[in-house]
Image 1 (cartoon, rainbow, N blue to C red):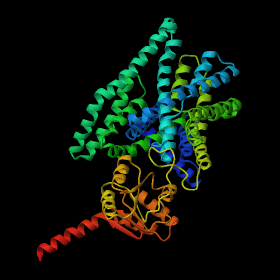
Image 2 (image 1 turned 120 degrees about the vertical axis):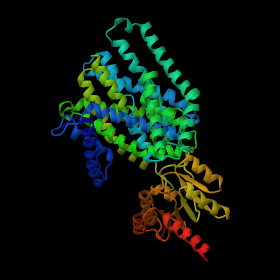
Image 3 (image 1 turned 90 degrees about the horizontal axis):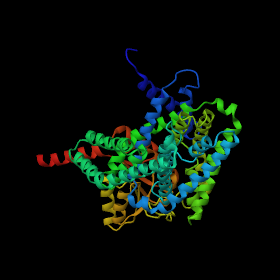
Image 4 (image 1 turned 180 degrees about the vertical axis):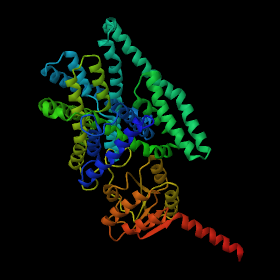
Amino acid sequence: MPHDTTLIGTIVAGLGVAFLMAALAQRLRISPIAGYLLAGILVGPFTPGFVADTGLAMQLAEIGVILLMFGVGLHFSLKDLLSVRKIAVPGAIAQIAVAWALGIMLGLWLGWSVAGSAVFGLALSVASTVVLLRALQARDMVETEKGRIAVGWLIVEDLVMVLALVLLPAMFGDRGDEGSGAGLLQSAAIVLLKVVGFVAFMFVVARRILPWVLHWVAHTGSRELFRLAVLAIALGVAFGAAVIFDVSFALGAFFAGMILGETQLSRRAAEETLPLRDAFAVLFFVSVGMLFDPNVLVEQPGPVLATVAIIVVGKSLAAFALVRAFGHTNQTALTVSVSLAQIGEFSFILAGLGVGLEVLPETGRDLILAGALLSILVNPILFTLAVKRLRTDAAPEPVAAGDAEAPAPCNAGVVLIGYGRVGSHIGGLICGRGEGLTVIEDQKDMAAAARAAGATVIVGDATKESVLRQAGLDEASTLLIAIPEGVEAGAIVRRARAINPKLVIVARAHSDEEVDDLVRRGADHVVMAERETAARMAERAMLTLV
């Protein structure tokens, strides 16, 4: 090779093998996360064949964390964050304390020092941002009460870990004076001041500048420039937060998204970043697999099982008890506890720092990595079991934004999916005639507009059978699919036809291929925007020639 292609090789190997393993996982009807993790093991340094650059993979994975937290922030408001502070702050701190104590006991039992055991316990106490958010998003739970509690809990954990990453070098670094009580208090005070300074900067300065920049770019009419602006804001704020204020990339990206989420362009910003978010999230799971040495399962099966038990059982039971103690339902407690039953990126950073400071033995890092991989692998299974445990006859998952419980199934004759530019016109015409209409929409602002127009609104992902049933599709007469995404529309048509064979389905498409696909899947009528526009324009032209 005439020049270094390490970065390209890492991306190609990571995404290529991840695709093959995810396709296999899909075939076997298991979570694609299992395929991503296996792909990481295959291209990692502990298996023969091609070895990707682990350091580069971890940095690429960090971009995935940034984009994912930015996307969550776009759908999160300051009001949502403050609404769960009374449970998220004490709950997260108490749960960290329980997991920390369990980790210390295991470390001491393995013969490690108190300091090493403490670092080990701390690494087991913090959940992975990517895993938690992917699990919530896959089930339309980010904007429910349970989702807000879990995200708020996660943010508190991140802040605690930021403090820990600063204090550990002060406690165990080379300079002895930094290990004094006064030095630790000074370090802690500086960290807290930086966090407060970052939050103040975001809500006093960035809150005025960032929306203005995005609106200005939107008015240029350039989609490419808008996409670039969104990515620059997400990555730039995250990087600046880490470099200037010493907070985590994820926290900086979350606040950037939350500020832009208050604008009318939040939906468009979320759509523009979605492909990159998904791609880099895959690289995160691949990077976890690359760090894992399968030999640890054979050499230390007992400690590995104990580590996984602390993560999956100990943390979950503590979180469940804490959420119930604050008066929330079993449903909320189970969802929050299961979502936290894994560890990830902060755990790797703590493990690396502990080994670098010669506090944590390398065996501890191996156990942390094994615990991370196994808990991430088990987490989707736990989530599925939790959902089945909480399933009701009407709907397995509540999908109404801001509601703790799901509303009763609707019985409107017409169901409309999507309330964007096309859907809002359709809804206005139907509601304007006094007809009953149920709208399925996954964006809060669009859902609010549909509700204001007089429609019954279900907030959720229309590709899920549970959401379609909640909208009363089994008794409806007509289904109108107004979303522009052909792939999602095809999945909706197939599921809708299975639910109600007599249903009249009308969908929109943008190409002949999409028309053929929708008809093949069961759509009765497909409206192609380009054809309708051409027909109307030709009709107008013919009138002028008469």
